[in-house]
Amino acid sequence: MPLMQRSLQGLWLKALLFALFGYALLGKGFAYLFVGELILVLGFLLFLPSMRVMVVFSDSVLLLWAMFAIWGFCRTVPFISKYHFDALRDAVLWGYGTFALLIAAFVNNSSQISRALNCYRKFLHWYLPVLPAVVLLSAGFRDRMPTLPWAPDVTIIYLKSGDAAVHLAAAGLFLLIFPDRQLRSGKQGVSIYRLVGFLGWSLTAVAVLITTRGGFMAMMVPIILVSILKAQKIGWKIAAFGVIATFLALMFLEANLITIRVKGRTFSPDQVMNNIGSITGNNSSEDLQDTATWRMVWWKHIVDYTVWGPYFWTGKGFGVNLTLQDGPPGVVSKEEAALRSPHNGNMTVLARTGVPGAIIWVALNFVFVFRLLKAYRLANRSGSRFWSGVNLWILCYWLGAFIDMSFDVYLEGPQGGIWFWSIIGFGVAVLRVQASEARRSLAQSRIQAAQTPDLELSSAHA
Image 1 (tube, rainbow, N blue to C red):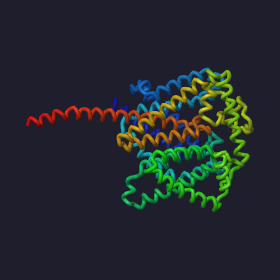
Image 2 (cartoon, one colour; image 1 turned 60 degrees about the vertical axis):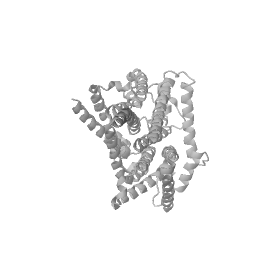
Image 3 (tube, rainbow, N blue to C red; image 1 turned 135 degrees about the vertical axis):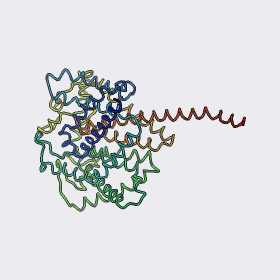
Image 4 (cartoon, one colour; image 1 turned 30 degrees about the vertical axis):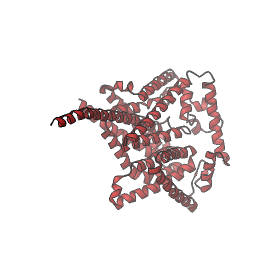
């Protein structure tokens, strides 16, 4: 039976990888196939007889998620009778965290981690070359693409630029932190893959910068972090690639090969400068300034009725349309009203679960990051390049996702929420396996140290 369980869990992990890659490629178009939800149900059914329920109480991050989920459950059930499916849909904010639990329970050794990373590398070989086309189609040609029969407003390809930015940063840093050893063989085919992948990365970065400021921050901050932490080994590569990518981007924009307008923004050097100016605070674009003001007013309103208001302990719960009830300025279209969330996952947590839920949410993420940094430092001290690289890459993936969710609707949907909680779960699994191997190595070294005097004494008598 244990062997059968391990086999089924392995199949489940492969299915989850397939779903994650689908979200990274097709975005919302893949989300409306409901593959992730089906995988979640199947995984939970596998988890129940696995006798790993106590894993929740043996890990600080999982325990905090359980507290967050219990509080979220309490703020969901009372609203099901009133809001029906909307309450359940909003509850995925904490419900998708089950993926973190399942991954931490099913990934128990370093070989599983290595296989997952190898699958991800193979995925990147063709993901990066096609990503620019996917982002451009999603941003500028969505009205010309076919839609899903059961979701007329959702096209088959619908990858938001912010989501692409998170995956783009993680992909580039993965290839820098874990360089392909086969490149040393000098095979021309691999070099072509690398060149095409770099071109795809650069063009996608341009699209991200033009269409989303938050996405650009989600892409650049992790890259800057790695440049600082790995200045000698990786920092100079990032600087060189950055110069080349900027040159290619400027050539592409100045060539004016295509003209695309997305929400009033044109793919042009002027739009790039406007977005950069808005990030640094020197923005001359009225449209961009209005967008920032619209969000700040709404976020302040949420703080007022939770931290300083009547919803301090409870929040407004799951099911209510925050866009319609809060009445933020500038909401005029049906599409905007259907978003339901304030373009900030942290504010969504505060609005729906109150201050207690927000405190648990902050603690969960803080503890996760603290443990990753601690594990990264210990791995560097022990000379374990593999574990330090994995720790750093997971930290960067989390950071990119967290920044993007702070400026967009990311955590509240499967294409972002399942990815985020899977990063948490994979990170917890890595931390647990890494700590287990460190304890085993320490125990072996102590045994060897205890046996050494006996050997020396025997040699002396001889």
